Image (cartoon, rainbow, N blue to C red):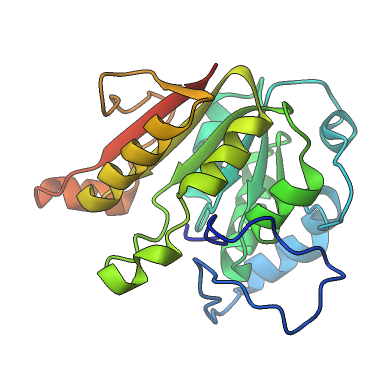
Length: 240
């Protein structure tokens, strides 16, 4: 579930920006094979659950067909956790950004199999979605689970969760809304905690790292890591 532009390059260019304008991406577009089931899900469910990127504010009530708290998820991988959380919290809307086609197809397939109605997917860079589609104060929560850690020091600048992006996320949260990040890299957890602590619009809900909220499921990858003694760190801050 690794996406997005590094926040140090802000704001994101509009679609009309010159083609030669370069930005550092914190994701790499991987080639992946889409299964027959995923392709069918794109065809049958895409028109209802996929949102095209556009340079205009999104009407969330019209998008979901109801007025409900909206959670933005950045980078959902193959969508297992997303589908689980959306099923556990049917009273909330989930706007999910992912750039990788097989992951989008996998979540669409799950939506169809499980009959879920509270998920919408935008297959686009979430930073540009933030910049051009989501106005200030429109979100009730943000989930960023296991973003690419870019563990080599020379690549740390590619990490998603840096101060300018955190400022954008905080500005789009309603008062009382939350930002929940999780990572299995301690160095990245320390950076996330430091960056979020420095954002004046946010306050920590814990002394440092938060206990895992009940709504976030343990993934197969995470379970394997725990058995091997690897750590997982949750950071949950609230908009003030």
